[in-house]
Length: 102
Image 1: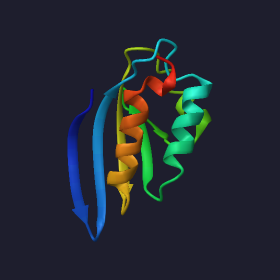
Image 2: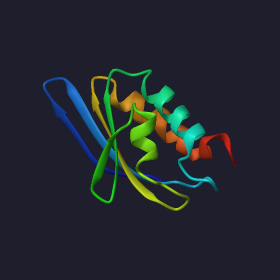
Image 3: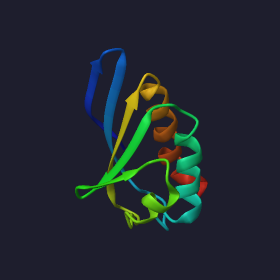
Image 4: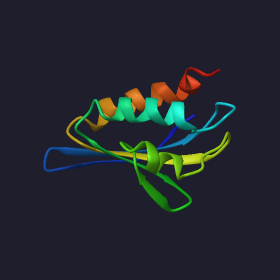
């Protein structure tokens, strides 16, 4: 499901980037976007979600909806901060569960 594309340490901060494919039938619509934001907001790490070069704030429902990520869309998610690994694990679980819609 996800392929690690980069991990770096800089001054005690960790940056992790992974690729994911949206698997739920309706894609990243309002409910899953809200779940994503609630999950991401539990962490201090900065979360960014990108599609085709467009980068959105992973802690903003509106920004995620503007990605227009339907089923099968590839997304790159980046977590940057001291708790980046924990944040990425929680996000990975959410996506693996299809946002609870499968």
